[in-house]
Amino acid sequence: MAKIQTGKNSSKKEVIIEKAASLFKSKSYNASSMRELADMVGVEAPSLYNHIGSKSELLQAICFKIGNAFTEQVEKIKSSKISTPEKIEAVIRFHIEIMAENFDEVYVANHEWKHLKEPYLADFLSIRRNYEKSLISFIETGIERKEIKPVNPYVAVLTILSAVRGLEFWQRNKKNVSLQVLENDMVNHLLNGIVK
Amino acid sequence: MAKIQTGKNSSKKEVIIEKAASLFKSKSYNASSMRELADMVGVEAPSLYNHIGSKSELLQAICFKIGNAFTEQVEKIKSSKISTPEKIEAVIRFHIEIMAENFDEVYVANHEWKHLKEPYLADFLSIRRNYEKSLISFIETGIERKEIKPVNPYVAVLTILSAVRGLEFWQRNKKNVSLQVLENDMVNHLLNGIVK
DNA sequence: GGAAAAAACTAATAAGTGTTAGTTTTGCAG
DNA sequence: CTGCAAAACTAACACTTATTAGTTTTTTCC
Image (tube, rainbow over all chains, first blue to last red; front, side, top):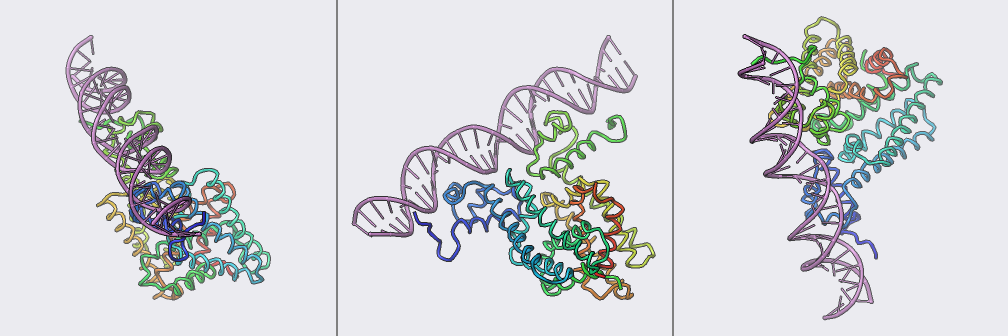
């Protein structure tokens, strides 16, 4: 009856999910076969089903792990008593850090959520929309308090979220640009611009 | 021997490519079947092959149409004698406009290029890298001329390109935010920041 | 060591894939 | 009207897909 762990603190199911994230990232969800995934795990395809329910369950696990991490973090920032620019800075830095630590899973959540099945698809979109709304209200509050220029809050959030999402391209250039420079420059760019 | 056009100025092949862009956008390349595409065109699947060579040829046509449009535009901007911030502004506005006019194709080029076959994949990546390089050299020149703050040029380009790429999310909110507001606010945000 | 559970295996299935072959229909040129 | 090419059709192929059934091996626990 007792769940058996494989050595360390990660169950075999968790190993499968990690490998799936890596596979889905490099080949996309639909082009990834359970046979390939099984190969990566070191097992035949049907054996995977002793640990997981289905292929789409893997995508769900990945997307919601990331979605929940973002939601949790934004709630923390929401309840902290710092200025609006500082809140936005905290959001940007969190995006950069989670991207650096969980690249595969963030990438898959960003790119492959479309293949979630209902009702998970609707749930995921709802999580994402709430996240956006939280950020929009940060900006709105900042404008009221005259900490932020009177911009369209939706466009500002769109700009910021899209910019940090693009960090996925940075992976290629890790050598040329350090995480420190990246974080500081992007925060500065998105808050203060680049024109002298 | 002569190619026959279907009525207007668009051949049947062009119609197929347009429909393919729409289909690939909403379902992704791999999840789109030739039978579905045929349905959208109003024909049986094998009939498509009277006009096109293969499924992947459709993806190629879409990706290179967009890739070449961007390359062409950046060359124009490169040779125009305007200040660096104005060049960057022109780039951003071009992205927004081409996204507004050719949404499906831009979306597919951005999301599905991974499924191009060699040598097209390598060619596409090369086009994209050259585009990035052009923008980086804009920023470098701007820093030399003291028009731009001394930032890391790669990070600045990454931020700008990612931000404009995110315009795909704006499609949902067309009603709430006009193209004018979007363009002006995003240009301002990426050049001058949002902090007062 | 022996029982029981977990997890591996092989074999198979039903559905869907892009594409080809071969044939019939359509539509224009003379 | 006739002939011919373009483009539609049906049927089929060879392959891949996720997943299930049934069985055997491995591991765990006493």
